[in-house]
Length: 422
Image 1 (cartoon, helix red, strand yellow):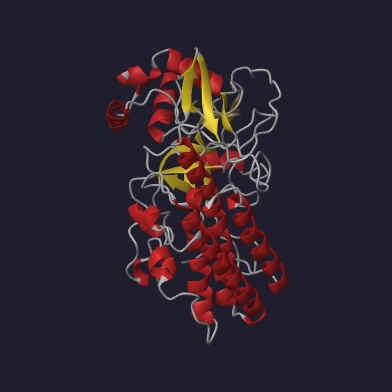
Image 2 (tube, rainbow, N blue to C red):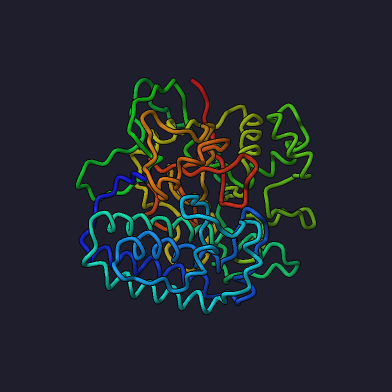
């Protein structure tokens, strides 16, 4: 896999590695062994599996392959915790990850500690290639930290008691914003994607490059995402009952699944509530709507007389904004979209669906070997999302970052920003 990685000094890389690994453990700390073992659906994985898989990544691609004499903690576990790397051989079926009651959560944590000790001891003597894999592994684990939270949320939502993972922040009333403002987008030829020069300190996944030219047509993009109050108006106007608003596949999905509102929404005595990591609460009308599919996002855009932005329109608009700003994950604590503090914000709160298919850029080539399977083989049938969410670790995203999911999926913190032609 080509990752366009500028290498940090070993001490800086060791510090980053330790911080990333500690956050994963902190996020899972409120869970019991039972909480961490259950799989709520095929798309999700148990918390224990996330903790184990990220450890397998470092043990396999760094310690096994670059540290002479290293012996696996348990040579039976790679079969359990490989995800999709065909080059690494047979593996436990994804839909049955919830059957792994053994090893226990405590044993997984012991494994993590052993791998951490071995990797930090080896780091000063690692080759640049191995250091690059440590850097990649840190970004890989940050992706799994977000998945860990969204999978825990989906799991807790299946419990009729609707338990909270942690207490929520006190709710401060916020006035409903007016209609979204419109930012005139760049038109004409532009560059998109990411090619960091050799020796740079930045990081990008291979699917973000190569940097290439694109043509942008005259358009405008909304200065904020759609909020819960606006989505409630869409529901009240029969948005989920009007086939004229929906793509054919989306309408079939709505009918088949009986979808009438965003995931985790419920109407109690005429009031919309949502379930989050802080339990069930009234849906804040000023907060960004979340847990909606591409199908829902596209239907809402049609209802609003707009459309979804292309990923390149989004990237051009976001390039001038700080990717470390906005409401993102700063540690083990509440993760929930918040009402806008004012002004355009392109990062944090919710991943924003675009109208762009997840396909390779011109000149894309996956690297040889197992890590070349990281992104390229998934470039089929999915749509691009941009911007990060409240569950994305701060510092993980950038304007060129391409997330991707299938159009029906909505258990992630996914929302909507509108665009329109000029």
